[in-house]
Image (cartoon, rainbow, N blue to C red; front, side, top):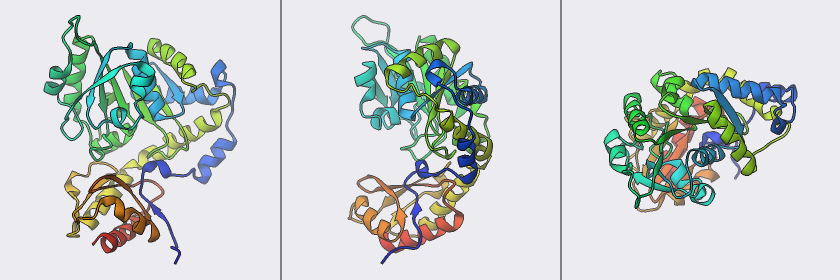
Length: 345
């Protein structure tokens, strides 16, 4: 039996361009971006850099590329990067840091995904000939695998000051930085001020189809632009995609808090089930982590849920992740929760 509607809560990357966004794509003014001739890309890069308080921006195809370009620009082969053990760069970027930049990670068990100053101090290497050089401290805000948690700003400030005293750059993986801002009420620029470089994703909660923007100083972006070309990220008439990103910033940035409300609703709807463990009070943004309490693995429920019209991801033996976004309504959330209670319960 078919389902009348698919409710896709696997990720906020599954959003599709709205009619208004498609119109912006169709009407975009374009040029060759590798030659620096695409006016729409330039407008996007300036816009994001301004939002983050940085000198310049660089449009790239993906968040992974943005992060990896940053590591390559900040570090040299043999250097070390301090990061939370569950950060996206460590776990979900296919070992690119080792393969492309020749750097290794030194990981710490951060507090809900966020390393503390004390942990960073312990992890940064002394300047000694036998040890790798700590070139980068990597922070992630919001933190994906920790459940969309927001980094406390004061802790970020302390870490940034210590890193700079130690001669290490700070890179902020801000794929969902605007979600952090919406959740905390703290301007994205204040978080970004703690980092030498920041990546933000346009194709998650903002709903654009493709792309991230890497921001930093003019000198940093000049280096990053070369590595973008080296990594195959130089694009031509890409203003058609940059136009979608500009539309997303102008129209979808103010509505991110709605996704957070829907995530809390989902958590509250699931918390009543004895078959699942969900801490609704810990939901800070648009990600809900769901622990399956049965002996059956979480992955065994993905197929049956899909048959009922709910698409969701299993991230661990007993862990499911749900992400709310602009293409999922409050009614969809309530229906998804009902189906999950029936299938898993």
